[in-house]
Length: 213
Image (tube, rainbow, N blue to C red; front, side, top):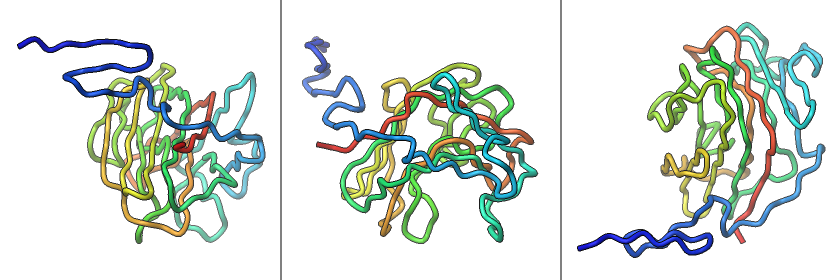
């Protein structure tokens, strides 16, 4: 028996099963403005001390010794973009961005969906020693330091499923962590509760949001 691979336009037919050539196929882009980019940073610092936006690149950095994003919070330090104005509780949503992580950044969340059943997030992609992980567990991509790569995260709030793509290829799929009154996407650097580096940084460009048609 011969297994055939037929490429026709944007669709790949493999073993008789059609697979989307791109994670954004079947989605429509939701236009973003600067108002949608809410930058969370250590509460006692100016924005320019932990964030810059120049030539289309958003640079976010934080130190493990920094304070939380709000006074009185006991969560780890972060400098994150919180997508504002697009909270949801149903439907299929997707975040996309091209990200660069300099060598040395470790134990930091790069992208997440905030919200879940009794938990703060339903999916989180962290980097540890150059490898992308689902939280601190499964390795989903290796050798990601010092290069630009495309990161897509899809959350099906109705079916309770999440998927992660790196450079257009699905690398991870998992059950979501329950329902929430509101979900929203975030990206940047958010220190893990333990085993994080002294300094954490990520750079982002071409950040986009999509919703299933």
